Image (spheres, helix red, strand yellow):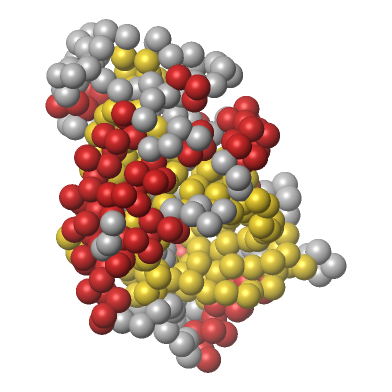
Length: 387
């Protein structure tokens, strides 16, 4: 959602009215000959013709009618409640334990085959688009990832809460995919799932990500990756990336699980060489940051230092600690993230699970044995334990 601050009009007859704080501020700025300010925001970029799809697995054979045990229930997420002004809703199955008991042992391969059936045409179409992008541009990196979380809805006034929800009615609502999981869930991945599916520890990364908007390129968000320098209480910049471009997003409500899934195909391009002036502006923002563990995101800026001229502005900060586990087919990321959005003054700490399907990505790009490759990843029961 875009948050636009209200604009205030000033009286045209300033001589006949008492000066107001707003008018004095306006006159002061004009005397200093300040350039107009801009409101930066975090940008999520979708490719032309990108595909977004939501569907349900584990419902009745009807395909649209849910079982009586499935209900829309309020789902407590304080950060989303502040943005939406209401509690989001989630599809919950009262016959599935919502506590700490794990349900993986009861999971069959059938639902995962339905994911393939539901998303395969969209996946193939999106891969064709990425292939064209690979031919036209150097440095394009495609990725297929699976994320665990919860599909959430809002706009309940559009439907009757007393009626059983159907897929048709839910498509009238707005939604998002919330990626935070419980402590218990994260511990289970570490203690049970990782040894079971043969993943080995690769590396741990403790980084700060400063998201920066660029007034001259409003469709771009720069991700400035940094490491902490505790002795000087600030950051060291080591990489600047351009925001990812989403080609396909499939959100799946899994009614026989406590968690849902997002399957996403996206690409990243290498950032073109920045000019000396651009780098100076970005580095200035990073060097002005102060480490502060009492702040959401772990960073703060002195007054006026979160912008660089009238071009670059800090819009969001992340402090993430991630552990990576790998095998020949998968790369699993377990991440603790602490975020703060400067435009909305809303912060949140979360635990997240992301699976990079690197082997499937390769098979998709060569378009050989696609269905076989997908089944290699999704069908075996042990592989499904990462959910």
